[in-house]
Image (cartoon, rainbow, N blue to C red; front, side):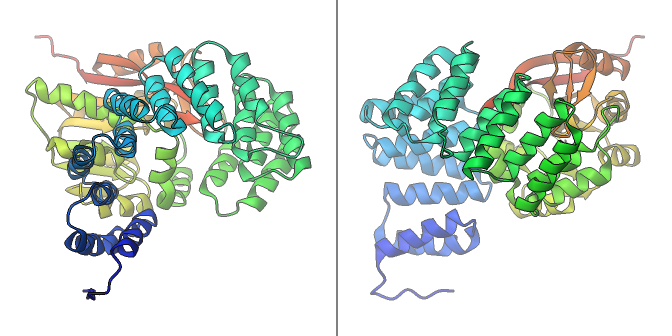
Length: 474
């Protein structure tokens, strides 16, 4: 245990705690935070540090209490409101996030960060026009901020004006390069709108200006593949690997480019390789993409609890690093069992201490071997790695208790059936999902339109579905 001397600088100690939390060294930060509180007493700043520490350790209820204490201690301090707003947004509690952000704007009308937070919360609530106005003010006040410009483009496109959204992205670029994140967002926008030649031209402009990264070349390869330029696409993927040989996302893109569109599921070896390489950055990456599903599942489970259903046991399929466990930890339901194909993802989940049991296995194989039944079966962003869903649903059906709920997310498709995307995930049509569930002896209790996450600040549409066993007819 570290010994503190009388000469210890309280300010330096607080800064050290913040740096450790930022670096993900929560175990080292805890004792120093306790020492800082001993030296300084209670303060809003220390409440915020404690909240960040608790959140990093998956202690969501404790984190919420510390954020509340920070706001209570300094209700007229805009930064406290902003911090709690961002926390609520990460949990998927967009109403609370919007209220705190609005209070921050009232307290400091000139703060573009507060307006950006409010705009993001409003967008998540489906209030695109209001979000667009808010984000326009934020971006005008901080025009050099690429994240605000990207968020404004998303709100503008969601508000029904894709041409203006693309113009917003384009305006942030210049002959000398501009922000790389904006260029990649503009390229991805073009790919989503099937403007493949423009996407390639934007990537070439970036290469000429020297503003490139592995992701840019990966996106360029997507566009070239769509144009039938397969040799050129192979060269772009090779450039992507040169720039990001250890980047799991780049490896994911390149591996996905080799999957056959007719493949009925992502191969287990492919999934294991992708997520083993992705594990140490998975939480940070998904949070950065505005990943919504754990918070949405939490809201569904609140309804489940209110209806008086049994609190467990719960099976989390494709549990990954345990983000769903973090989102529902304060609900005090369980016990929670997780299954995932990636040993490194499971190692990250294990550190959170939220799961009674964790199993490394391919989900269909595990369901076939384990004979237990579950009151709740959850699958957050796991079903998207399966194209044909009838075998998976048929494996889940006997594992679900008679009145149990199967809650899962998928990416939405406007076409019929299912289709493999360039990122290695599948999209599914609503009618196909309903038919596949019915053929497995399951019925839809609820199906919600849901933004899964953002890709280059563009919303990825999907569904959150609650299914139950079809009642027996005697």
